[in-house]
Length: 590
Ligand SMILES: Cc1cc2nc3c(=O)[nH]c(=O)nc-3n(C[C@H](O)[C@H](O)[C@H](O)COP(=O)(O)OP(=O)(O)OC[C@H]3O[C@@H](n4cnc5c(N)ncnc54)[C@H](O)[C@@H]3O)c2cc1C
Image 1 (cartoon, protein in one colour):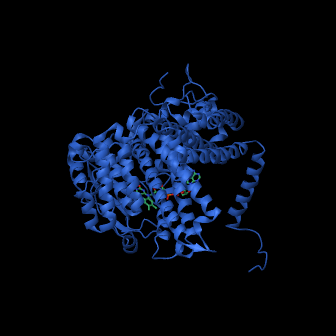
Image 2 (cartoon, rainbow, N blue to C red):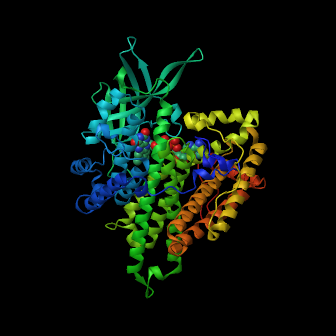
Image 3 (tube, rainbow, N blue to C red):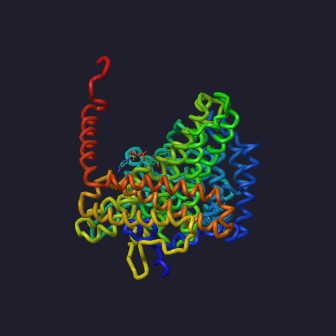
C-alpha cells in the first residue's frame, strides 16, 4: 500500500512502524533521473575544480577575512549565484538533489565560499523563491541570479537565537497602510554587510480569535531603506572568509509591497526555508568530511614514524574505517533526503534534522582526527588542517543548534503516542510550537493503517539479512520505549531533555541504518555482490556500530538511569551555585 503523502519515515519509527516505500527502492542516481541536470551539475563541479586551482585561495580568504569581489564575480558568471533560482528569472533552477551535490563539492573546497553561496542561494534567494509574490520575484530574482548583489537572511537577534519564535524586532503598519516601520537589531547575518536584499523577520500585530497579538512576519528589506544600518562585522573562529554583520533597524521604512508572505505567518516562512537548508548543510558537511579523509589518507602514507608510514598502524586504520563508514551512511541519508525534498509531498523535516545533526558531528570528529593524525603539523600554519578544523565547528551551531534539533526530532516523534494521553498532547503543543513544528507538514501524524507493519517488507540480499533483523528489532524497541516513556513521564516528558536526547539519538541511528541498508541493496542490485565488497564492508561496520550506540541509548532509557540523571542534575546544580567547579583543589587551594 502506498504511504500517505506527508507521512514521515522518522515519525513512523517512533510509533514502531517502518514506512518502507519512503526508502525503497533507493532513489535513482541523478544521471538516470535527468541527463540534462546531471550534465549541468558536472559542468558546475568541473568549473569548481578549475577555480580551486586558479582562483580559490582558502588560506588567503581566512587570513584576510574576506572573499574578494573578483571571486564572487567569477562565481556569478559560472552560475553559482543562481543555483536555486527558477530559469524564468535567469537561474539554473536546480533540483534539491542537484543543488546538494554541487554544494557538497563546494564545501569540500572552501567552507567560507560555501557559506557565502549557501546564504545567498539556500536562504536569502530561497525565501523569495518559496514565499515571494510574482512582483517580488520579477524584481529581485534576476539580479540575484546574475550576482548583481547578494541575498541574506536575517533572523537572529542579540537576545534571541534558538528560540526564534520570540524575536524582539517589531513591525508597525502605517495608518495609511503604505509602509511598515521596523525597529530592532539582527546579529551574525551572513552577507549582511553587502547584501542587496535581505529576508528578515519582525513581530507584527494581528487579530487572532478576537484578540490583538504579536506574530512573526517576514519582510524583504534593502540597504537603501531609510533606517537601515550595518553596525559592523565580526571576527570568528572559522569560515573567516565569509562575513557576518550586525544590522540595526531604526524606524526602518519598509514599503507595504515588501511584505513576504502573509502578515503573522513569518515563522512558517523562516522554518520552511531553514528545513530545506538543512539538506544542503548536511551535504556540505559530507563533502568536507570526504576531503578530511583524503588529507588523512595522503598524509598517513607519506609520514613515516617508527619505521612505518602512519597508515600502517591499526589505530590509524580504525580512524579511516570509522570515518569512511560514517561518510557512507551520511551519503546514503543524503540520497534519500534529497529525493524526499524533490518529491515535494513528503514531510522531510525530521530526516533533514537527523541528517544535519549526524553530518555536522561527523565532519567535526573527522577534522579532529585529521589534526591528530597530522600531529604538530595539524596544529600549525601553513598546513590547512587547523583551518579545516576551525571551519567545521560552526555546523553544529547554526541552522538549528544540534541540541535543539534533537529536541525537535524527539518531540515530534513522541507526538503520536502522546496524543493518546490528553494532558501530554496539550503539554507538547507549547514546545512544538516554539520549535516551529505546528505548521504545514509538521502537523502530519503517523496513522497506522492496514498494511503498515513494523518490519522491512522488502526482499533483501542474504548478506543484509542480519542488519534487517537488528533494524526491525530496534524499530520495535524504539516504538515500545517511546510509549513507556510517555506513560512514565506524562506531561513532564516535554522538559525531560535527557530522555528526549536519547530518543533522538536512537532515531538518528535508525534512519541512518535504514538508509545504509537501502543504498547497499540498491548497489547489489545494480552491480552484483562481487562488485560491492567495499560497500558491504562499510555497511557492515556502520550497522554494527550504530546498533551498539542504539542499544546503549535504549538501556539509558531504563528507569534505573533516572537515578543517574538525578545525580547529574544535583552536580549541575552545584556547578550553577558555585559558578563553575566547586571542590577544593587537590594540590593547593588559592
Ligand atoms: C558564523 C555564523 C553565521 C550565522 N549566520 C546567520 C545568518 O546568516 N542569519 C541568521 O539569522 N543567523 C545566523 N547565525 C546565527 C545562528 O543561527 C545562531 O547562532 C544559532 O541559531 C544559535 O543561536 P544563539 O547563538 O543565540 O544560541 P542560543 O540560542 O543562545 O543557544 C546557545 C546554545 O545553547 C544550547 N541550547 C539552546 N537551547 C537549548 C535547549 N532548549 N536545550 C538544550 N540546549 C539548548 C545549544 O547548545 C546552543 O548552541 C549565524 C551564527 C554564526 C556564528
